[in-house]
Length: 627
Image 1 (tube, helix red, strand yellow):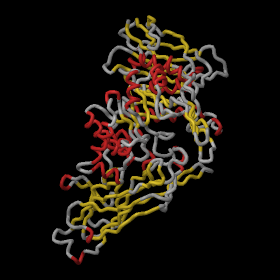
Image 2: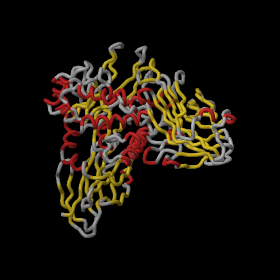
Image 3: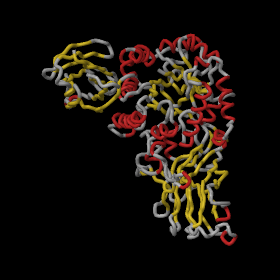
Image 4: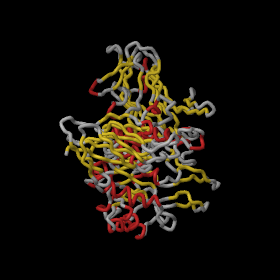
């Protein structure tokens, strides 16, 4: 288990570390870690996850915040991502001349829009630093060839023949809150372009043609970003960026396009043959003496653009090469629906899942998903009677996508109230203070879908000193006194994850889930050894909803697993299962509770009714094996 613990004093004293160890966690995430801090962790049987964002040696942070992406003209290969450029098949066709896969114009193709896309968000400035704009460069890898091999295109008479127009544009994302629509403007907010003639080509080989000094200053902030990031954090951006190649339609030549690469200065430094990044990252790693006390390094937090993904992959490879055994990790902000934009924007990058794209492009050690589903996306004050169910459903869809891509994924559990304080010291709710039932439910829901790592955010209570306002209500108060959420982790979650329950979950695979079962209606499940589940001792006013999942061993065996969770807002806790025989070869079975280790022998010659209790937010994890 991982604990986020950002000490308000920038250091963690011995009593804090002892309390963290007593909590039952294994790894401490902290900013600006020192050797003294690591020594305290190690002395208490803990390891560090350094997040060196404001130190002198913060090159992992800097370089994972760099920007570099190669966009293939023929489209992104499915194994490397979903967000993609598109080419018009009426103008161009695939080409693999000289072993380079790209596209080329069809002879006699009419003028038109050859390449567009991908339609994605680019950072306007360095994170938290609006005074430091990002300057991009776009390199279009192009070549030309004559349609008639007897023609020399570089004869001076052809030098002014137009080949194409290259452009980088950003469109505005427009939100109409009255009717709930969101769309992309027809007219770009900002355009960078250049017209190429034959004179701009030197031979018939591929060369980069560059648009430089691209910035999105004055680009505004899209409603998507406003809804998903803290106020005042991002002040301008490239809201919906596209790279465009407009074919001029000359019958003298064919235009070939290999790829379009976009980068900032830090991204290009990573790409240099003898990159200074290797030396700089080595200096950061060597600046901490007790590297054995470091489990993993934390990169730039929550990458905000697809352009951060390739730098992340490169830095991860460098760290592994330098240390021989260590990697980097980051958590993902996957927005309310897991995608790059609202469900109502099914185009460009907005139709795709953040976690899946990051997995394919960045190749991380594992996907680490944030989970703050209590008053997000819907708040109880917004008039949606099903706000709880809808928020959980959104979270489940994100989890499904992450777990589908990475069976070793992890989840960060919200255990802290968080508010936003503006420059005028006005306070607004950002994340509510969860109840212990909410915390338990989020943890168990992640386990239901096979999460292998659980993290908790945030340990300390934090105060805005300028406004003298408490903005984070952590697991301990400002005096270090634990609250009921601390004790829920210490006494319930941690012992389970380190015990039989956690050891079992590490080695089995989720295979099926049934969500939001309404138990008063005794829903039939008819899967594996569970025929149905139902509520007992209920009235018409009862709310009792269950999430149910099934697992199997990595190596098939006659073992059957069921994991049931009572939703945190249910009003009852009594449940009755009806078990059925999953294998006609056997009649007698042993039912083992994998939370408390108790066992019951049952005969399944016919269906068998079994009653128990599951408290709100809690789980019931059982295994059936032939006796």
